[in-house]
Image 1 (tube, rainbow, N blue to C red):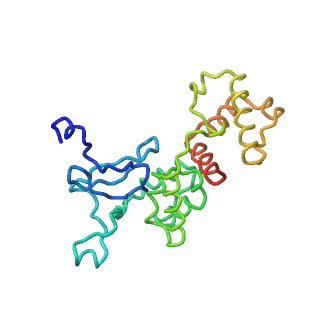
Image 2: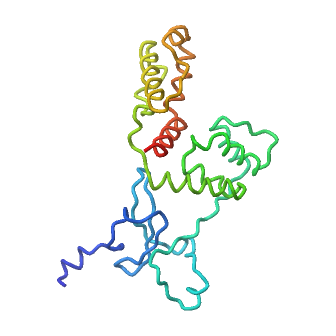
Image 3: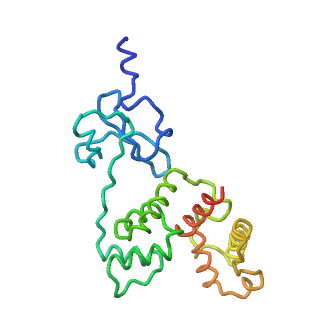
Length: 230
């Protein structure tokens, strides 16, 4: 092999990262261990494992023989310890009342009320606080979100084109109609936003209603609906 050929050999594993699930670990061409992570855009890629990373989960037989027959070694997820104040902020983000509740109680309420509108990163913050039954459900939801990223929301969500206070009344009603029609078409549920009702709402109320359709909660809910109905 020439010097040029050596230079062109990538450091990570030769296999495509898209062929493996999150947390898969393999040895790279550089001799280091690499694991599959997901980028902000939902793309799988190889990332070198540093010393501070979570330890590799090993079976008793593996520890004894020091030999791993299965090259797909899974990293044990690190439990995220979220404080009560941080948990209350999360509850506020998803419009859940938080007063007078313990961490485990609040986490369970957030999950039961808002799980379908939560991002994988927020679900990961509460998973360790939930009972076993809910914990299994939430882990499956997290896995599904990472493994099936949604980029086309079928009109149920889109980035806000400009600040709501910069939109005219005509623009507010037009955008609300578009969202209303998309949600009713996709999920078959009346959004209670008839043309007559929109015409009678104040500009302030129109902005409040429209703000939800541009929110992360609406984005996550739309994405989860699309995943479940592909």
